[in-house]
Length: 456
Image (cartoon, rainbow, N blue to C red; front, side, top):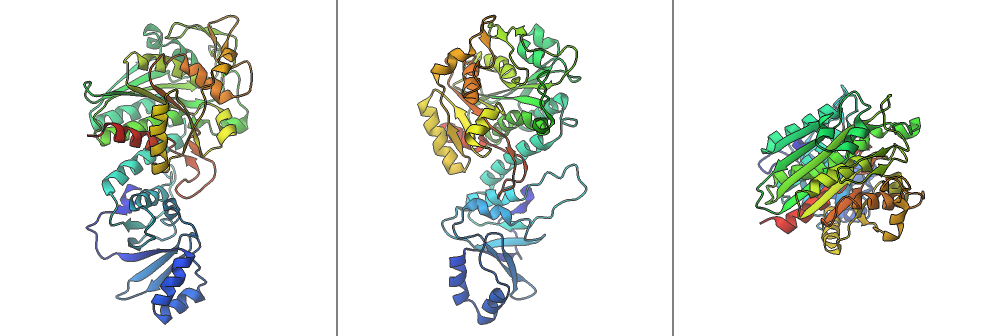
């Protein structure tokens, strides 16, 4: 994917024109009559995704590609697979289309998860003069990283393999990585992570990545790493279970954010906590009506074992605030209720901080990484009351499920500035730059916010 964006030293490239229907008519009046006739004979109209190659000289071709009536930069992502295994330079595109965004969208369009297939899609390569290639590759590398992790099946990316992926990421950037595994989770007081993952063959674990100078502002990231979610004893039906390899999408997006922070060498002190479990079923699986201890000290009544993500996050968030970070952000594929509220393309987030919300939304719009603030509505907090424990981990009402899940997590963050993402992490239908499969939601907005806040 990343080699699909050529650097500025490449020569001998074929020109590529991106044309709207209106620009096409203007161009046809300026080009030769013979060329205009070829375009009209081929019924090329400038519709999004149309491609036509025109001979020019010395065996080279001019390629025109349609980008529709009201194009945005993301639309270019439909072209890499349509243009064949050729090399191009962007000779013309509407001035309103930002070159960095065009370059990133082009690379997103060059992504397919074909690691487990013999067939490989051939993509065109493009040179875009004026794009900040380094920044574009940084972002494209992060989205590829997140997508690859989410798309990998759980029989390949188990708890051990996800831990190793974090170790490898740490090695790439000189970070320190440590893990608490299996029974050691109980000895070191992570009882909820242990309870959720204890039924699986591969042991649960909490992986901790540390990078940067501890004199710099402290940023903590937490990501839900459920490598597969059967629902536990509250077992999901097959239709709801078939996508559950994506239930570590929060971990993938947190790690993608960390990757960008480390690659950009932001002057922050970064701590990343990834609780990793397989929510499996066996004789020692945790049960509805169990009461479990937590790292915070509160007892937790289990209502539904298919609400496991908030449990492992509770222990991880409790650990993360012990470092007193300036800001803590968690990513989690947490609730179906969030999808009912906002669908698969918008990333809901929660925070008590109006200041951080404003900063996040400004960068989300700039980065085309859409987010939407949801309310931490205190009026629903009592729905988490328990008759037998300090807290029930799901609400007594089925309404506002994403809100009550966030309210549960809020009980474990104390006064720490905190942003919680309840993401989908998946594209259920193909659209430009978003093939069906795992997806990044939130990392670009968060990284751009942190870059603007802390970059020197």
